[in-house]
Image (cartoon, rainbow, N blue to C red; front, side, top):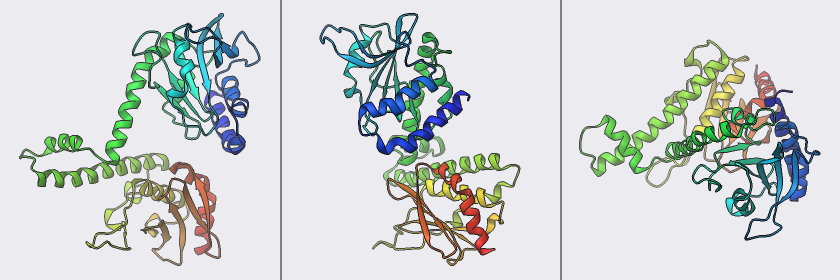
Length: 359
């Protein structure tokens, strides 16, 4: 298997064993050691490559241990601290890594709970581990953009200088992406003011600011929606973009209203993305113009021919755990948990079978 396949294989294993990992040792054996061996390519049984329970006197503490040290030519290159699967990762739980950074030659440190791997170096001050990681790998939601960076840490490719050189850009790139995500979710006053200044020459009064806050929110949502549509168009082929475009006029938000007459229903970007994915799956069966959506307070419904008697599926995205509801021949809904939007593709066969019930 190539590097990507090995990562994907470990990701699938995580999904099957995560429920039985009650201790840190179980996490190490089931996930961390396979990551070191199968993904990074180190021989976990060779102390010349991997030293478990690595110990070094740090001056302030004697006999403290780091879970693993990865070696090259007899020199420590990477330090690894493990936590139990399910534990939230925080640098306050990595005191050994901070101390060992100053007394070993290691330039890279990894903090992991078996599912998430946070990679640190010393960009801010020499021989002092940074407070923030320069790279985060999540096996539960693999990001294709960071896979090449993780590959640089494999035994066959490892070159500490090239890793550290790339770390600076990665660290700030990830922080900027996080800020952008926050702004897309809820734009700040400063961000809205910046956008407004690019298109509006007048004085930004309170009324203008309020108006452009709503305009900015709509613009950001439409920009993301257009990006999703472009991605789907590329994946599907040279079909007309109009077939997969979500028209705002079709976004039905029938349901309860509050005292002011404003709808309590808010169609989210994730729901729009999910709707587009379902249409992309079903276009092989029916004309996508026949696939409609109806958003409610409790779920996002997708129907054939805009007919309540022809439900295709429901997207339950309003809670932390997301579900897709699939309908059988009796129109009974079976909910299936999903981790991210792309998981909808795993239910392609079931969705197409549901369509066949109405055709």
